[in-house]
Image (cartoon, rainbow, N blue to C red; front, side, top):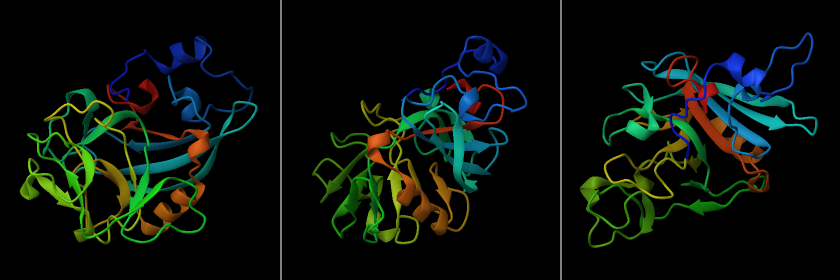
Length: 235
């Protein structure tokens, strides 16, 4: 995870050789970024501003010549309270954390499609995402709640049949969880409106993303805004 990495302006990044200038062609969003995670697939989730609750999700492929090309896009929804830098986010604030994150695995209440080439966990009646700050299982999937993880402080995944029909875990606060920063941040199917902090897209887009995602190409997701301290290009 690389939340809030500030590396100067886009012009400085270009001057430093982050992307080679091609006459007559504007640099794509990934080509203007400081870091894309090192793989050859990338998802960008970009909002117009930090207070926005909607924006655009685009998934990209990196070609052998280094150029990034669009593989698909969809309208996105963000947290009901907008976006905030991942490193300073607080739990239960209904904000989406900005930053560059890995995508550890996919999951869903529905079976994985035959075209899904990604680690996939099927949700069961015992599947929970522990969000209890006092638990050793904080920000982890558990099959059956541990004794130190309260149900009232966790998500029973099967109860979100629409949103979690298909989803990708976003690696925010995941590798070394900081209690109180937030848990259970996913890229998932739209619900009725803005999210509690996740990024969501229409079901058809989520199906396309899972058919496209290839774990061997090390996909990442960059969440941010079009400009300012939380701009996608800063990651």
